[in-house]
Image 1 (tube, rainbow, N blue to C red):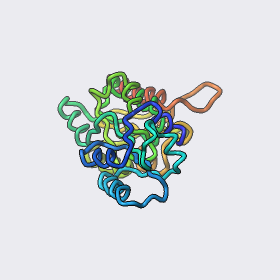
Image 2: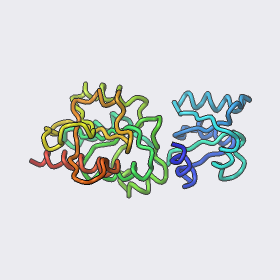
Image 3: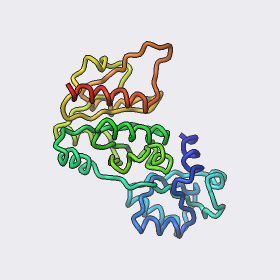
Image 4: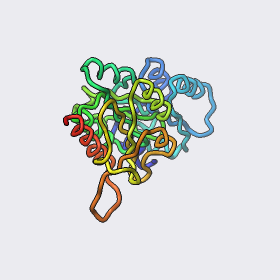
Length: 254
């Protein structure tokens, strides 16, 4: 996790440093993906920042001064650094509305724990090309819409809305009420070629190694396995998402 945090920060994805600057960013309605605070600091301005973060539901990570110094681009962080989103987030309702406006059955990608910004950007790009109406990501333990993600999406973010939610499992339950059913990428699942992937659908993909979390997987209606014939047992997350997304496309075109 820490490695990805440093990649995000080093690539200048909207870093805001200094107490006044961070407070103003929150109050101006800027979307902050994550707040880094000096561990043990409890003075007035920092407590104000933490309250603003709480109002927005922004994750707060407590770090040492050495860590903040390493993250800092100016050397004047004053004990706080905010990583701001480089692109605005949509609402889940916006994704459903897009499907409705196009007269199509909803097709949504839900990503569980994707931490690599290049993978997220590539998945958003694939989602656009596969005709998905949007992508949903969690607030915690996942990368947000950083500048690296925007670049890797190759312009797809201009057309494919991305919503950020607090709880993926709860979001799945809410979308089921809208008529969607869910298929989860899982190595122990049924071959994707044997599944009916037509209709309003949500495709759930997890990070490499960890896969989809148990609680999220249990909310899904079925699990899909990508048949593999090689000597290793996993695929890059963005590649797996692309293969499954295009199996959905293939079935929709039948």
